[in-house]
Length: 260
Image (cartoon, rainbow, N blue to C red; front, side, top):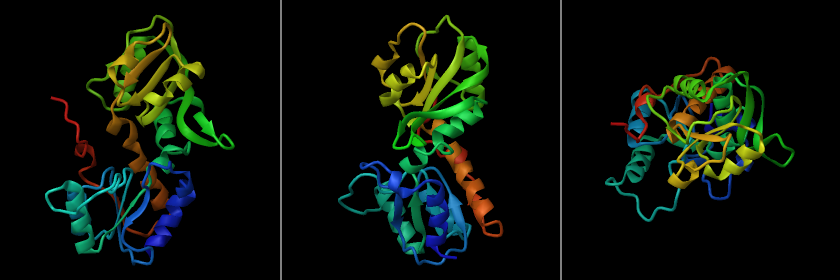
């Protein structure tokens, strides 16, 4: 099997053409014609993930976030990105990322959040084109919950010990909108969707001043998106049932943000 065969399966799910102009998804290290004997899935492409790929005989690493996201002026081992590139090239490990393409398909990042919460009638929050793709998702709970009950559900669903939230609302929470990762730009769309609650990550201070009947919960960037690794794992295992596909054994501990 070649790198291009695995890429074709991923892009059949999340086409690279969907990526945003500022994104750098796709193959960043390696050749499409490179032979592949195993795939390792992770969230961020770190030097440690490349080491794990080598140790497990995986010559293709697939992550959500791109290894090379912004321009780099040098490739040096003192820098984590530079070290990951050096290790990947030296070991012959190809590196691919599906970032905003997986953000913008409903079976991807935000849709996975909605499904984990058990929502029904799930739709794209901010649709583009034919309406089947776009950022975010919105859906309805089977039964309304109080704000406190909704907070408990969110914490349990996403494995949170804490979350950042705006003031409690008095009305029941029935409709929930969400966007994995940095989602402040979709707050207006969440309100317009009729949601009482919006979930995302990386919310800055002033956005927590919310209108009556509408609340925001910042559940963390990593926590909101990491489920995409399991989605990709299921996709590739179904497509290549006799091929070595594995999730990083350190995935749960790879969040760079620590809560002390």
